[in-house]
Length: 294
Ligand code: L34
Image (cartoon, rainbow, N blue to C red; front, side, top):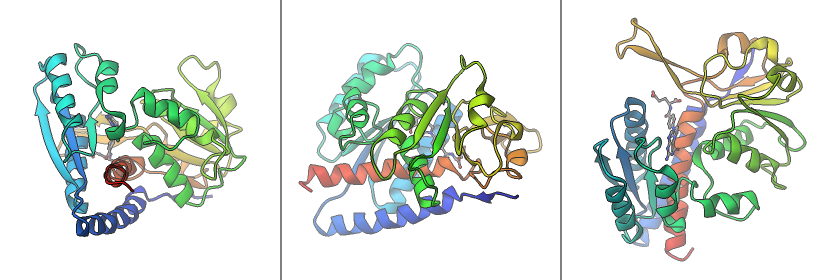
């Protein structure tokens, strides 16, 4: 069998077209969704993600307030900027790109973001609401993964899902979203991590394997059953002298081996990444609607 590729770029483009129409409609009512973007430091991957997010905002008509701060920025100054954005009516969403430099307490910053503007869904209030199934901002990468599965027609109800990775931004929230009693949940979820005794024991019985470990080749063809659905959340930069920029991107799975065995698989790039950006746009538009009473 040769797997069908889930085209994240196309699905993201479809959702962005829907959002663009919605933003145009909001503008007729005098509403312009706005996002405050904060990047501290000059990590090349973070620069590329933040730039892509701002470009995507512009394409659909979201206003963005760009803030690129030096790596030495103090926690106090960063908190002051977040506070300013909390009180700025033009800003409906605040994005503090992670990771932050070591001298800044990440949890302290996330806690300072007003929950009403928490378009990344990382504030403990948002996380708590998500866990108990209340309406809230859902974190962008796991929300994007769920949307990819739904729009690719993958049945989640009763599915055996194995997530490899337990980060706060992907593995943990994704597990929560997929076990909710809802049409986009109802899966049976196992979460594997670095202390799991035998990851293959779990992935071999999975209908859907989601790799979010941050390490290439975490999932190989011998670890899965034929017909499995593979979602690859990884984005790893591998040095490659033949490339202009000196690297190529690979995910967390052995794509070449798995595409012969899976029924559906996401590529890297062009899978989950564009969906992460799209769900940020979605949350920002939702936030603008809520701020204006709908
Ligand atoms: N606050 N920090 C905050 N929110 C987030 O949602 C993120 N994340 C993760 C890192 N830190 C964050 C992102 O934005 C990961 N992430 C992210 C966003 C976009 C892409 C990948 C990760 C993406 O667009 N990937 C492209 C390739 C990009 C490239 O060429 O470098 C893809 O097609 O996969």
